[in-house]
Image: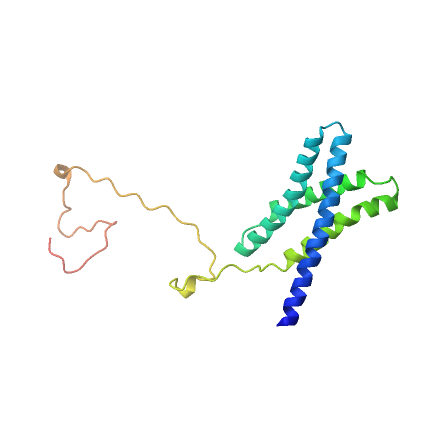
Length: 180
């Protein structure tokens, strides 16, 4: 028990350190690239916050959707787009060489690797069914609900006429033993 808690604490610490450092590098690169292309300083920080926090939010959204059994396709595409935007800003600010690009990409790639590891450990099963729900319905796929049939429009009371004795209407079930 103590060993598991210590290991879990070390994992969280590593995640926080790598996340903080990668976030600081990514924030700085997005900010600097924005300012270098003519935007005011505050917009540089706004862009950095938007790009980096969207990537974190989308990662958390994927985890929540997997936990609830909802689709993650669009959110996953958006996560990749924002991660690539951050990575592009880091590479654009690097020395124009292969090693410059690789070194600039390391924080973003490390962060993406950690996000992948954390998200892959998310439970993918839906919540347990309610106890009062019949067991046969627990794992069945939901069926489309058909609209309720419309009540037939009844003619005015003066127009209501019973059919002749011995004639059964086709839309009525035949009942034995009822006196008319």
